[in-house]
Length: 233
Image (cartoon, rainbow, N blue to C red):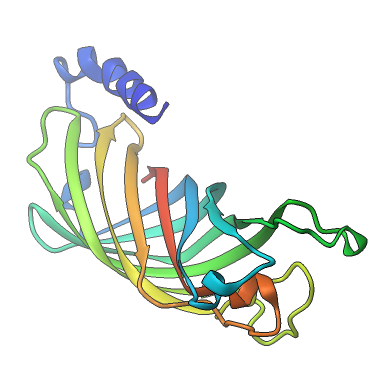
């Protein structure tokens, strides 16, 4: 779907590119500002704790992908013709990841079933810092790549709350790297930038609770995201 959207934008500009240039002085500005809206696919990469092997109550664990949204304000600092430094001072990421458990002998008296889904909702404030390299402009199109680090604070994480049924406790703070590729498409009054980005969290955000079977069978949890976004400058 993302590829189709990108082809439509590029195709719509093909004839215009042969006739005139839009936003000719846009890339000469020291600062660029924009609004970004995106969709993400998020999941947790995890490792099973040694107690999982000896567990009789849980025989399988899977991380389930989920779809979320991104809302952000872009600030781009021009360093040279081909390099920029950019960040998102306001960057909210909404996700709902989940773990699915297989219980061979569920306790139906407390609402358990053979397959149990434990959701982990996230409202994350992310602060990235990225170095962007962009190609020469070809009429009204420019390709760019970027990479950098990020610090994230999950406002919905429940590290400081008591563990209850249906809750996996997570730390609020995470950090990692992200990289991606995008296109600048120059229109007469704005620049549209479709972008694809991969994000990797380095920190183990799992606050393991040995007394809670859905948490005790998991060791480390790391966040993984794929994001497709549109930025208007």
